Every structure is written in structure tokens, then in C-alpha cells.
Length: 301
Image 1 (cartoon, one colour):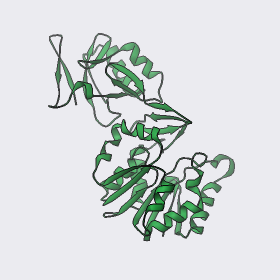
Image 2: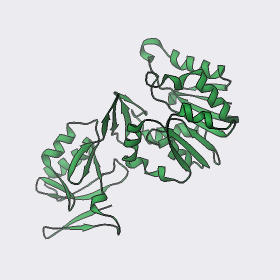
Image 3: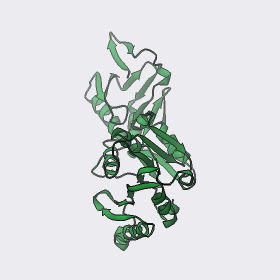
Image 4: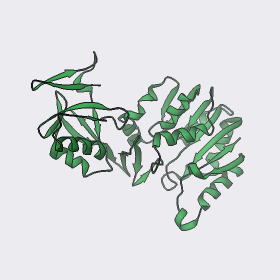
């Protein structure tokens, strides 16, 4: 990480050997921009703030009405104000230019900041619980339901990779993390919280899990984390046919945690989760138990 010091009005760049300024990205959102603006307003000469979305903090130098990140990157007060106006977006500062971490395809995808780790939003729907909980810690709670040391884990919808990372941290021998959406993979590649996907025990698969699972051997997986997008985007991942495939690849006694969210709860009650549980039972799963605090279902083969 880079540190800028001000010595007699000269900028001094300190960095680890082998790290080029051109390779450095800074991640900002309304929270970090507000902290910098407050320091500028108070006439401070430096500010300690996170530039990697709350993973760590860094000391930055303030020069009059702009903040210096390194010898090639700085932001003015007006630029910081523009970040504050878009509170649900993550900005990247690189090559002294700002861009938003978002993609527009058939749907609208963006990285969304929180007080902890960021989440992904697809057409306005967040892919992690983030109200009152850190999305990264939320992933840990899901993984702890079924993953044990030495397990071979299938992570059906990898997303930002949080469940794969926690599976490896909890001792999984191998994690097969499948993600078909190129825009999600692009966001993941730039998310500081996804860096631990470089773990040698995590295998990242770019493809459709409906196709991929067919090539897995019967009873070759110890535990499954199934965290699909909402039903309207991936209805086949909530179907009995796919659940039968999950059942097939799991070893006897293997566990499944299926995140369902709470769609339609306000209008129809919790029938969506109940119907999902029934389909899991029809596919052969036993001990199908709702986990309302995690907005999901746990089941055993």
C-alpha cells in the first residue's frame, strides 16, 4: 500500500518494491469521500481513510482543496462531492481518472458499498443480505451451516466469491465455484474483498452450473452452497430437476444450504420458501429445515 508524505511541500512516494503506481487502484464510495471532505473542511493536512472498501486504512495527504493518493492520482473537492451524490455506487480511481464499477447488459449490474464488504446488485436487487450485517460475514454464516474441514464443496453461483473464500478458510479441501455471468465475474475481478479467490484450493469455473453439474460424478461432493439469483433471473436453479442433480452429486449425509431470500413475502407470505422446501423433499433430500434468520433452507442427502 502506498503512503504519501508531505515534506516541505514536496510529495514523497513510499511503496513496496515491485509495485508500480500504474498498477494501483483506489476504491471510493460516499462514506470514504465524506470522510475526506470533512478533513478538508477542518483544514487538516492528512486524513486516514479506507481506499479498499473497508478492508484497511491508509494515510492520504491533503493539499488545499484536493487530496493526493500518489504522485499520479488526486481528487478535487468537487470530484469528491460528485462521489457523495451517488451513495450506492463504488468508484475506482486509476490513472487519475474515476469510473463506476457497473455494467449494463440485459440487466444492470453494479458493486454496491456497505459499511463492511460490498455486495452486488442486479436490477436493483442485492445478492447478499446487507441490512444490519456485513455481506462478507453473512457468507460465513451460510457456509458454516454445512461446510466442514476436508470437504469438497460445490459453490453453485459463485458471485463475488465470498462463500468460496469462507469455505476455504474453514478448511475445505477443494471448492468448485461456478459463475456463468461475465459481468459478475468482471465485478469480482475488481473487488478487493475477492482477492482471496487466488487460494489454490478454490477452482473458479466460468460456465452454467446446470451444464457443469452433469459432468460431476455421483456422490463426489461433501457439501453444497446454493445461492442463486432471484427466481425471475434463474428459475431453473429453483426447479426439482436441478435439485435432483444436487442430490445426486452429494455424498450420503452431505449437506446443502440453499439461500432463497424472501421474495413475495409481503404479498403472499412465506409460500416461496415452503414450496422450495417441498421440491427439495421431492428430489430426495431429508431433514429439510428452514433457516429464516439466514433467509434460506438447510437439507441433508
